[in-house]
Length: 65
Image (cartoon, rainbow, N blue to C red; front, side, top):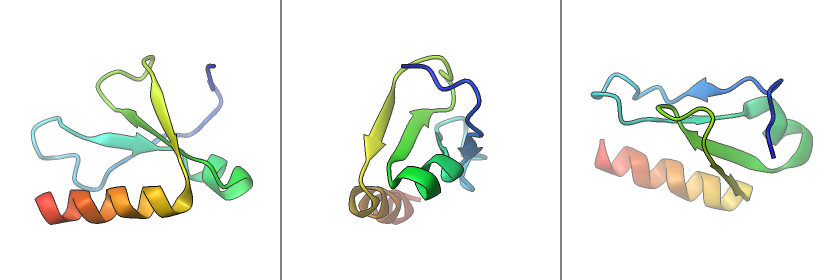
């Protein structure tokens, strides 16, 4: 499924050589689904995470930074 009208936001760590993710904050606020995708492939697939899983992903990413 494609979501052309979504506003995707890059990770604040996106200056790390191109390896970054984007998420759709308005979609998350409206639905509780946290959509995440690879910023290098905006037309590719995405993950839909729960709030708890998204928080765990952010914690994991920060621990690697």
